[in-house]
Image 1: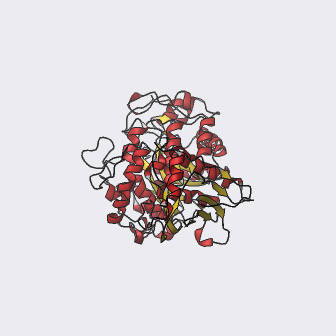
Image 2: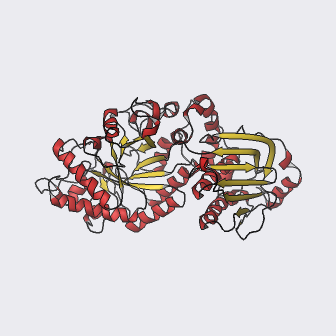
Image 3: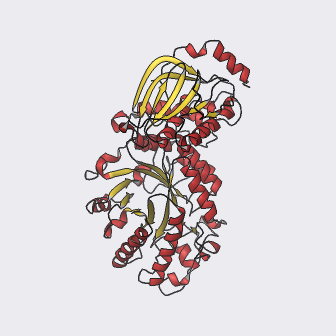
Length: 517
């Protein structure tokens, strides 16, 4: 076990001057620019985290976040100092640099010398992204929640880094199987390490309604009490949902809520007969078939319901977007579907949000600033582009986290493809469809539908290690990405994921490194 004295002794015996090479890192996503200088920076018992004086309170919060990640494993007890004192040898400095437009909102620069590690950015979000790189430059054991023996050395040099796409996210289906707030927060912590910035929450479906709506309470009292396979289901109170939103915001991750409609609505229809054509409520559903349910799209009660739901959720969600679903509404007549989507767009806009929907919504008359999420049909996404929409890339063949790795996979489905780790990595969102170019794309999102997983541990097996590759696709220019090079960095992340207790799939395509106890 490491002690403070041992770490201090390491600093005094010259470890900080041993040569290192910053270019031989295992950072994911791969940074835009790395310039090594061949020396070492060492964290010691004298190290602290300094925050630019007079800066926003956010910087102090980010400093505390970093201290919370570094102190448990190192035992160094680093403090966050923002009173104007000057940093010294072995310290970390967080500072804003307003005159660097290339970095944008999320870019950062790390300047690492033998004496000082400086994280600078134009915005606090960039500082937060930068400290994730600091974590990854340290040994994997830095992620432990108890003191580990180690020398906490970082190679010196400069890293300049900024994302390719503004939207880099995942979708979590909590409707087919419910995952509680603790699971969602664990996922948010994992996403932060890989610089992801969106969690899209699929909050309703045929099998369950997962968020409290105070004006329609039976949605959760009745519609939230089951899930696929007949489990007990569950739902988030508005207070719990607000805590998730806050937790995400502290990690510079935006929550996008989705209420899927007019199809995928059996839980709502079973809760309120007046939402049904004919006024008769169906039984709750615990299977996995799709396309059999629809709201009554010609009833004013339906639009009062939609307005109440959007109003309550929008008030709890500060992000720009509200996801209206719109997929697989097979029993909704085409004219009724278009009429419904057009009216729901007006409702969403009336509550101050912009619309995202699955690619089928392009059959309606889309509002300006709409985002079409391409999952199934390229022609739908192109139809959206022709109306001025942007495209969020989630092609099921490449990006669906619920697809099996191979025929031996324990969890997952295979209707779109088998997606091994190399298949998940070896695609470029801007090259799949000729009409959908880089300028048309808002970003990438990897959905996890949960028909086959009932615990978050099971979900992790499908998510990892593919999520790391999706993070890199969203952040790193395609010309800088190579599977042969990436798989070596990913191998080192196996050790990091072990320390973080992530139950990942050990693909035979990767020579995984093991933790040495």
